[in-house]
Amino acid sequence: MPVVAEHLPMEREIDEADFLERGRVPIIKEVVERLVAVQGKELPIIATISGPFTILQQLYGKEIESADTELIKSRLETITQALIGLCKSFGDAKVDGILINEEAEMTSDQMKELSRAYKPIFNVIKFYNIFGILRLPDEIESAESIGDLSDAILGPMGLVVNSKTVRTKGIALPDSVWEEALEFDELSAMWKDNKKRRLFFSTRSPLNLEISLNDLQEKIAMLCAEEKWA
Image (cartoon, rainbow, N blue to C red; front, side, top):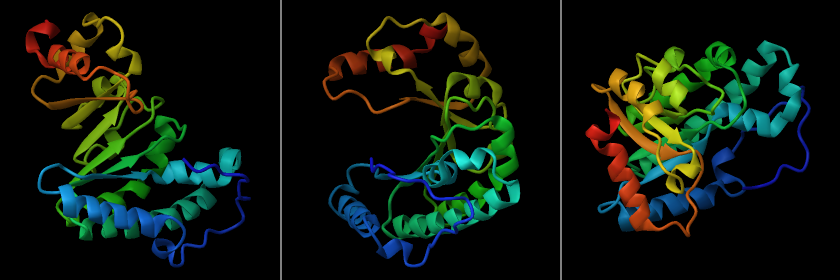
């Protein structure tokens, strides 16, 4: 990941002119286009984009904690417009889906207050009729305010349990789940409440490349076996 050497002051506006043609963005677009062309018929290609809150935090750092709400909304609107352009590029490239990866530290109340930033992004994703996933950080305990925007929401177990209206939900398991014995007791109530919904599993960060694929397959089989949840 690129390192931000210095954060911007909140009063400095973001220049989004020619965003899709500057820096590494054209390279990313070309890579995605080639992946779709070469492997798109055999594998689902999911493009990943950093969420608007994550970009806001990367650009302005801790200044957003004390900044005026209206100023934050203004900066988010600019960021959102840039992300819409990127989503359109990936849609034109005919990806199978787009994952909005939100890693910024925020509370459920903050997300509810500023959740309008997500709506135009997922409207574009829906326009292209591709799968839209929203990944939320561990601090978020409920996604009711945005539950109808994306096709699926990926987050910690608390989010899955508390968000009753979200139809497709993913559980971001701790990375240690692949290395340690599984504890099904804490998952049984979640399975009971969400048995009629669509669920999928993921991890909070990329898997270690040294992990045994056989062990991984065995763990997934155990997680997906309904009798293991009883």
